[in-house]
Image (tube, rainbow, N blue to C red; front, side, top):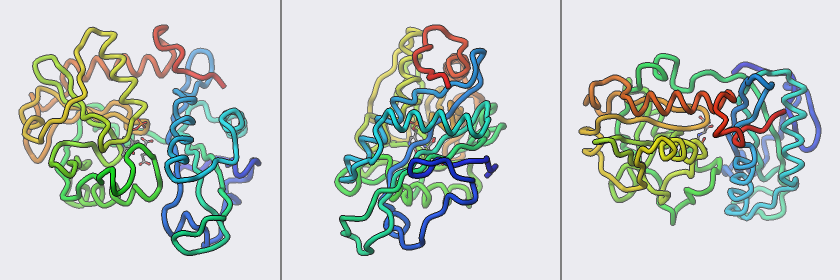
Length: 303
Ligand code: PPE
């Protein structure tokens, strides 16, 4: 990763190299942490953070689902984010707030450990590569199933949940694909290892409902953009064969932004190039991120 100068940690800005923890922290052993991924972009009016409130609210909900009380208020975390961006002088960056059970007791059910909170900021380019963002990525249906909501909680963005994503993402890449597509326990399409998933067929856009997928903030933004463009979008379960015969498919996420999908399981989707709906969404989304679309101005929080 490309290092920056400072990291906000437990209320202070510390040098990048000094933002360390003890190997005995609970979160490291058991994944008992919650985090966010946020992006800040350059706009004509300076650096703007995309949907900061929504991300920090999701962080708080994730914490609640893990019985965790965040030791900082939403306002404090917002102020910390501004301080961090200012201290690092980054015109655009990826932001990673994380809260985890810290050092104290070990043992799965330790309850009294302090909660450590940190926010990192660093430059991060196209998640699935520049080529992927332009031409589309190749997916493989994963042999790993997206976890059931009675095993873990898809509504929480929790550190430990990501072992599921790591297994799927690693498997797909080892087999020469760009990313994994995970099915849910019923065999329906869920999402990527770090992205929500959409298909387009006969002008209608479909995305899986929030049963087993992360409630993506980009997903919500893209649904709004589609509706504003009078393109029908529905939350509906669909199996993998619906993807094979879709006209278009794309993935969304903070890191991935809007990434076209050109193949699933070596089957070409549509013409094998980004389709008109995908291109339109990518363009409107990019304009919104950079403050060039007045309709979406309230998605940007200026530093
Ligand atoms: N599903 C998963 C499993 C997921 O991790 C993400 C974000 C999304 C959907 C999209 O959510 P949103 O960012 O709110 O639109 N994945 C984050 C982490 C990626 C990583 O490798 O770390 C991200 O995009 O920041």
